Length: 132
Image (cartoon, rainbow, N blue to C red):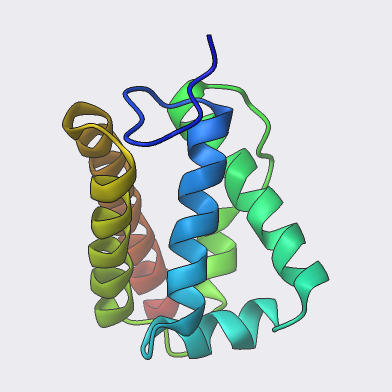
């Protein structure tokens, strides 16, 4: 049985794809996050399709252990000029809103926990990279 409509009780490729599309649609137009994404990803459909595929592979690897993502998120994020704590806070708030809308409470909490841990690790890594 394939689950096709939210709220999703489990995390799988279908629910992750929905999360990524919904979240990044909101992030692209967010007053704080949108300009960062436009500068780093661009505004073309092809650039965004490629970005969403990478993000989907990342979340698939993080949540389901698929190993599909082979990138280096720390280096990518450390290379974003002007990326600050406020951007991470807004990203996490928007992510929490989206997961809360699309997933049952246990699945949403699992995703939020993963996102919060990643955000902390990225912020620490960026701080270390900038101080070196």
